Length: 359
Image (cartoon, rainbow, N blue to C red; front, side, top):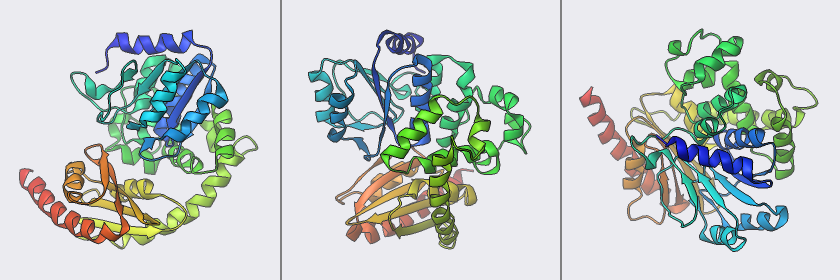
């Protein structure tokens, strides 16, 4: 639980500085986090981070271009040393809000992470940004961010009461079995997919989308394909065609313990596919590998602490991996993918057998 005085400190920094620059992860949790802070303070620019898994040094040029007086990093587990040094060279305050296990420490950084306090927790960054701004008008934006990370927050009931028709067939939050039910069975959940796919666009279109979202008044506006939202729907429709085909193909790869699916192409949709496949196969471990060039970017989902399984499967390989206990990722060489696959299938079988034995 993050201390109230730390949340208040961030709130005051938002008020104090006039030209904040927000770097946010290129997903709905990151986007919602930015929107909550930006709509609260009414000032500043936002930059979607497309590098993975870190905020790499190339983004330091934005500091020269946009001339901020404070920098915020939202929902990124890793930040390049050169980026932080550029911020320090410019004598700018740096606020970093995250919810992944901390892998780096920097001096003179306001670091906000629920995992670093007792009791430790891992709520999405949008949850804590909502607590920072304390603005119930934007609770629906915060819920979009939380839901995208499969988390139903304590303020979800108030959002449902205001937008009941968007949550049908559910009348109460207590009637919802899992976050996936909200994501894949309601109009409100559709908005998460809409924004997530729209973020997979060129930078100029993301900038247009962000400008729209800064001034939007309710989720209903995002369910209407109109001149204001056309850039969002155009990209969504393009991606959704590819996504639907991949999803149906992936379902045929389900085995007893593991669904392992790999694909290539111009679009990285591994995280989105892994999430929806877990909804369809909740008792399996889902592994989706996106192959591009010499690397395979892998998304893994499951209820058996898949992060520990993935890290074990990566041992001895030239690879990286990490994330949350039940939702994590990895990057391996394509030539090592068969080894990783064999290890995952064997380790998941063992882990699932132990998991079932405990029930």
